Length: 309
Length: 236
Ligand SMILES: Nc1ncnc2c1ncn2[C@@H]1O[C@H](COP(=O)(O)OP(=O)(O)OP(=O)(O)O)[C@@H](O)[C@H]1O
Ligand SMILES: [Mg+2]
Image 1 (tube, rainbow over the protein chains, first blue to last red):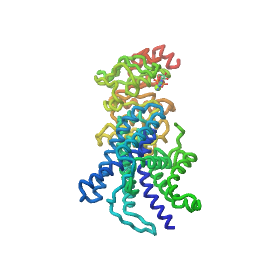
Image 2: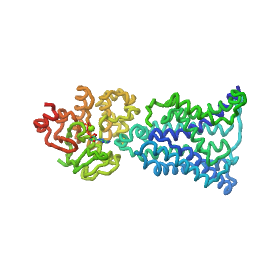
Image 3: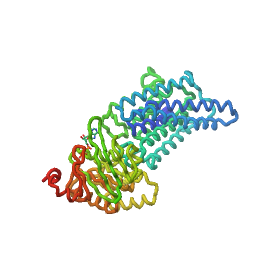
Image 4: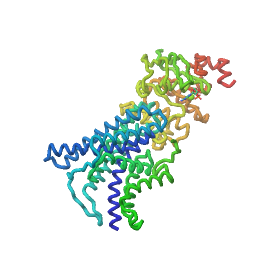
């Protein structure tokens, strides 16, 4: 019983990070019908930039409290990722907006590879460790252990999701985003600067990704130039699970995927009689992706859309 | 009367297809002008050219200023509004949100609120359905919404692309009453129609378009009696 609860907790924590990254995929898809494969790399860059800032600050101001140092890292990573995503959209995707859909898709993969290699040149091939700056505290809850970091991650993720929900549903920009997602032409006819709305969509997704990147590296204690690939793929799977283009779906899909993954990793040994171990954790995301694509391509909350590829 | 819109040599082409072949026309302030023509004559392309939605040549002056090659949203900000063919309501936004989108360029909250109240007063159907997704409205209700939404931007020139398309006679009548009301409030209107009968009745002046060119123009009452027009467009 307590392994179940423990894995559920772990899954919800990981899942809330997946959900944050999935939002970036789903918002861009909702507006452009583009799978922005570079989004995972934007998340990675967020983690890397934050770690660099943290490293510099630890050297320059050793007396600064750890929480402040991490916060400073996040506060630099956010605008860095926003600027990066703004640039990617403008340089790589905007010129292809009227091109056949395959062109921007391949471009997205290209951008993703470029960013990986750039990160490798800047930060090297080795793992960058997340210094032990955050207070360590553990709580027990019905036999499951929950760390302070886990609680902070979930609370922050939920706050961000609630904020995004408000922005999309209640604000003028949010309404313009939803209108643009339905028809760019009619949105322009309402006086919406569609280019600007698309930029805003990329920028908001990137800001959230920067935070998620720092979360994931703090959680695992490390970052790596290649981490965006797997994280991006899982977040994309989560977005598809929830129904790509659907914001609530990305949130739900992320949480579900985290839980499925954690429970799967917790029990796979038992189920296979010890043949497969918990390091097969990563398999579950793709298993889920394949099942969804086969049986319910529109995802859990997505509308049934005809195949427009 | 002062000229609000003047168009010279407007051309619209899609690849090798010349949809509009250099047309001239004018709309004076306060006028209701209609542009009639058969399927594929180039009417919608003309309106899209005016709104900057398609690449075009020639010159367009609105209120004395050149507007062509501007982005659509800046043209909207200058006071042009288009109710597109097929209505173009945002199906997954509510009726109220659609109307809010119509006022997107405005910042005067009290004015917007007053106009919203007026829109609901004029279209009680929309008021009843304000929280409903626009995609669930009937065709006629969607047309009302599209017109009401365009009016929320307080345009100085309203472009209407076949507002009667696909509607039952009673609904067409209601839509045309609305158009007459809007015109009566002093809004300048350029109305595109295939339904020449109605358009000629409600408008002051008319242009007849054929294969991308304007072939006839004049006061609507005269054109309605023109044997050529009667034969070609009024089914006689
Ligand atoms: N996006 C497009 N790509 C290629 N050709 C187009 C496009 N839009 C319109 N056309 C062509 O341009 C010509 C004029 O079309 P347009 O829609 O302006 O006509 P219309 O007068 O509005 O017709 P209708 O009364 O049927 O709406 C047609 O021959 C049409 O096939
Ligand atoms: Mg047309």
